[in-house]
Image 1 (spheres, rainbow, N blue to C red):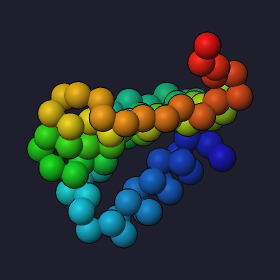
Image 2: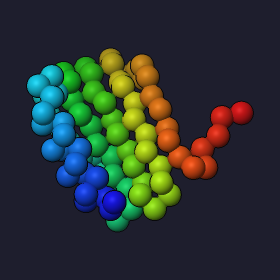
Image 3: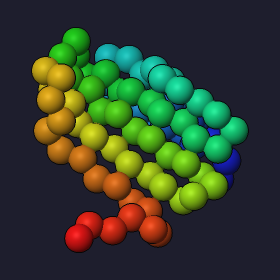
Image 4: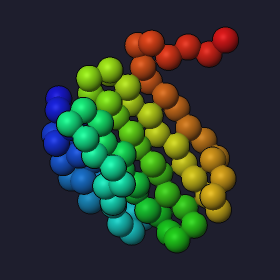
Length: 79
């Protein structure tokens, strides 16, 4: 999957969820994209993928604080 396909899939799938108010592409390169799925003015899910490195991450942000997040990467390790 390339960056454009990932971005299109997120927009398409997110459109099916009525609680999402808007979707925004924050940053995009040839290999990576960062998206925000806005739930309300103080709450959003930020998604990031780098297709070259196989990284996918997401974080739930509420009132500017990270509430929950995950990183999926073949090279990501927690010690």
